[in-house]
Length: 101
Image 1 (cartoon, rainbow, N blue to C red):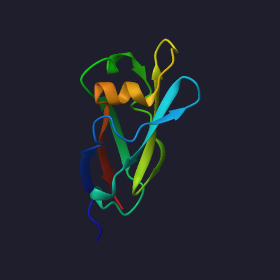
Image 2: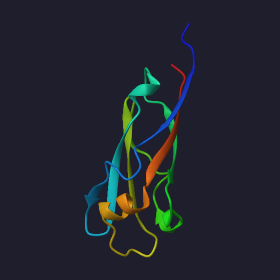
Image 3: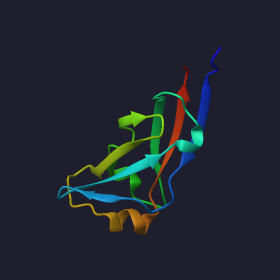
């Protein structure tokens, strides 16, 4: 009988962020360490040394699979956002996954 699996992790601070359009950035989150067998239920948040309170999107999971997902973020006021901001503030995605095959 399959057993439920819970795993957690985070991305490297400030690394892996890519530009998305004129005002956003995204990151592909690798969850292979969780050894999930199916697409789990993921929960995410953004951490860092500052200003992440002004972001929208860090808890929205896109394209979840057994090995990862994508997160898009932008400033709440729509101002320009680049990967340099993520690097400056060490932004990273914290995640928890729950798989019940």
